[in-house]
Length: 143
Image (cartoon, rainbow, N blue to C red; front, side, top):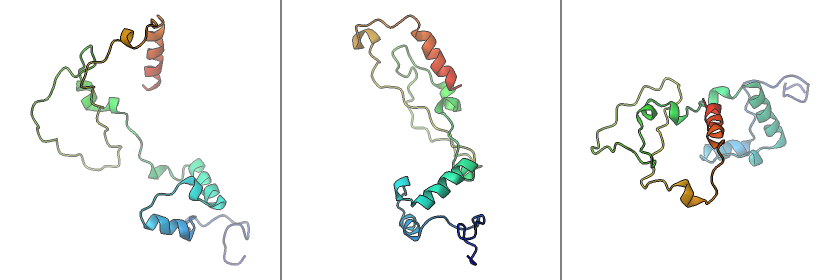
């Protein structure tokens, strides 16, 4: 066609054009979320194409695992899994870092309040002797 839309003349889509339908744009303007089921086949194809080419990568903030947070290095747990050092004061949190586009630091998850039960109380089956090596394999995958 003469209006230059993709599909009619075989040309490339306008990079500045919005691929969403009016109904989906209205849904977003109301603050509602969209799911893949909300997309038309054309919208879904455009989304998948944009995801595959990396066009959407600037919109996704990389996740930073909590164990890489400096606070995680200071976390000390007793053998039963509880925190060894319990903070008694409600000191104010340090000022937040400036938003430089980096992933926000995820605080380490809180340790359990109650002691962890021994494995022997959970199951009568003795763990295989190679379990410690499997655990290392799993942890190494996240390093």
